[in-house]
Image (tube, rainbow, N blue to C red):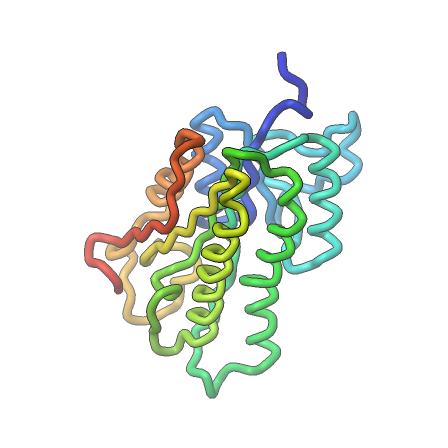
Length: 235
């Protein structure tokens, strides 16, 4: 039987709700070793037995706090030698006209949506091997503009640009970088926004089920950019 150090689990960042929660649940259904992290996860410190993370569960790590990211990655490295993949499913929405956005709101939006993504990527790289994958969620807002969405569009465009450049950096190592541009997937980000109907969107569990299947692709398959839309197209 293989040891913890020999296993190659999948990390789902943002597994507390929405898409990330569904991805973690569906990876469990696929019998894939996976670890989730989110601000609302279970406390993992002092778990004992030299094994802080039990596969299939979501653990606490506030991705907007550098100290927590560094502490988490350090603990993860004590448990495993490598990861087979990482899903970056976290992020916030900020939907206001540009004249209504305070600088503090803008900065907080980018700290979570971009800075945290960069830091986690940087720290997790030593755990990646040939055949590992990194999956970044952008959005239709990552390739076109929408009104009252300047902050969100800017951050999603930035994620896409980051992933495109990272793919070029890592492809010689055999590490796959996948950018997914989902259309409207019904999560909490849509609640309270006028003009949108839940029935027009992709159910979050359907999207999470599809996203989890990326972990089953053969190592030699290198998806680049994937666009997925609900039946009615871009809403």
